[in-house]
Image 1 (cartoon, rainbow, N blue to C red):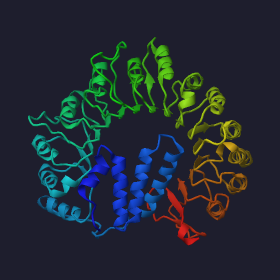
Image 2 (spheres, one colour):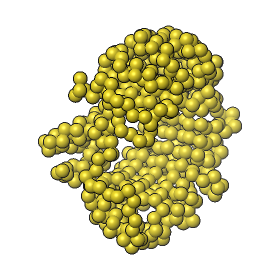
Image 3 (cartoon, rainbow, N blue to C red):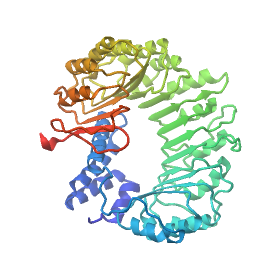
Image 4 (cartoon, rainbow, N blue to C red):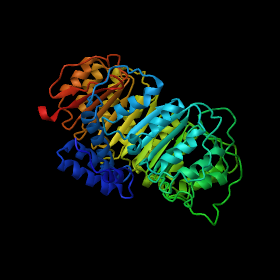
Length: 529
């Protein structure tokens, strides 16, 4: 297979105008007689162009997933290796290089390797072509400081993940020569102590950095809490003028009063934020309210005790024009929806995800009152113990013509006839008529429930169905595969079924993907109509 020009690949992965480069790469693949890869790159470019939460972005997601499964399943290789390759340490670099030279490798993951063979391998020609590298290390070798300085200038690396597998005793030292990775877009330094990160990022992180991730992997008490000046340094345009995404997981935040952003500093163009597994102080949320955020994710956090919280949350909801909001966990959930109803979020949100929230009756009531006023395209809802009643209420409250992706989780202990009634009402509701993707985790999907669902469903544009832990029988699956209810259905995913290891004969033009792990996946073969 003829490889694309390296400059074109680099531009598609890490260029300043990646969308244009991705379309150009797609045209090149088409000219070389590879329409599948051309379709892949056009979808990547389409997804990049689409606005977050738009119908176009959801369609692109589904198209990419289908193309990935059907054309890049990872089961066909250009060369064969025995199941186990054994070699001595001194032979490792030669064996690895021989294997890696046989394909266009762009990504690598190295874990807990000894220093000498690792140095030899990283100095080999194939590393200069990597776009993504993950290294999980138990210790940072002193010799690596010089190795990184030697390698960095010639690498195309745009995604770097250096994750500690235990609290490191030493870490990369500052080097007299800058170790800038000129194409670096995404950096993950989970497990590093905060004091060591600042000099390291100063050396490695090019001003092109767009994404920064850090997770406190070890509850050792050795990592000091982050304070407001440190956070401001990460989020300043002077440090990272293109930084658009940050994720902080299990960070300890130092209690302190809210201070204004320094007058001599400007903010990076931050668009997406994730805060998880922490006790969040008021000043942390306060710092994000003046960024042009489109996505904010709160995952299992607690709030520090402070009289400032009411005013901080009011400011947060009044200032935000988010398109996507994920709230994971139960804290403050009852107050969430009344606040949203009075804020700009009511009109701006397109994606609302409430996964793993244990909603109370009061919270569900507030949510159902809010839904008719919103224009959601994607909605993830845990129905809790109130599943069937919530399905009936959703059927009445979802506004028509907007929703493209719906995910429902429930633990239903009601009779199948009650569940069937709720599913029938929801499936025939005008609010789900434009759905492209539906995910159901409803505790039971007996044959009678499936029959009712297929008989009542009014979702002519549905393209993907996911059924999770439903206890569905093979007979119910056969009913779904044979049904003509969904003329545009392309993919069926089934997770958690006790019969997931079974193989099914083709039914009509449905085929089962030969996967060994993960969900059972069926796809419609349009070439076998």
